[in-house]
Length: 366
Ligand code: DGT
Ligand code: CA
Ligand code: CA
Image (cartoon, rainbow, N blue to C red; front, side, top):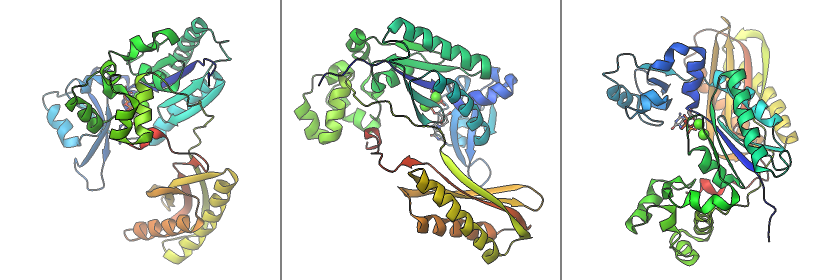
């Protein structure tokens, strides 16, 4: 089957959370900045969500413990450690996504800081126009939000994803149809999305480092080693083959309902009864939109108007009402154990939404 050539963008915001912090506080730009997820245990326990490039020069990166980051930056007296502010990053993300969406035929939200755009018709299959459109999107996001991003442009999602990472930050990398092999071959195998440390090591033991080396393996050998699904994926990826369509997906990744209690209270059964009503309403929305959820949360606004929220990630996406109710009840129980002041308003939220029919992406298997 020969598919018509497409033009696909992958757009990824540079050092996203840390860049958001720099935008609202430009003084941070000259300093190493680490955005931290502090854990409940207090002190410096927790992990780095991301860091700006200044901090990365000292070996700080996503996922490492905060204490390690502090050690690596101990001589940088101007280093800054900030707690994550998801609401603010979401607002920035929503605005930037809006700009992308206006410039796409098909818009696929991937996560807070990245999206795919199919622009084939928009640019009449013209690569020169595609470049102009890429630059226009970057300029618009920069002018309106002061945010920089990197864009990869190619005939498919796989190559565009690799290309957006190729000239970070503030990059634009175009891989024309006839330049695919030349672009991919010198890259490290690790650049293929989904290939992690373990897989890389396996190839390393076979003395294969680059994608050019990887092409020495035939499909049979790869399927033997990794199974049919992943083996085929790696075989195709090394050759720049990927027919996954860009699928319309919006960033509305949560639904919530909130209400004011008839009286301020910290009594378990009274609050639970109200939360159960909200569960029904939220669940109805989820069903109407044909979604499954993987995270359940409650929000409590206390009588002094301060906010408390707790959420829980489930093992698998679900659309079960019982599971929603059960988790809300458990979260409420946990919160009330240490509740000092009465509660005034309560809310229920589901997030990490996915389409009911959606197959999970191949790259999440390994
Ligand atoms: P880059 O390489 O310039 O795209 O840098 P980032 O920070 O945008 O990296 P990316 O695209 O992998 O991740 C986007 C955001 O997701 C990042 O700003 C923070 C968050 N994130 C990434 N990795 C982790 C992690 O291991 N833990 C947590 N909590 N958050 C993470
Ligand atoms: Ca990013
Ligand atoms: Ca990303």
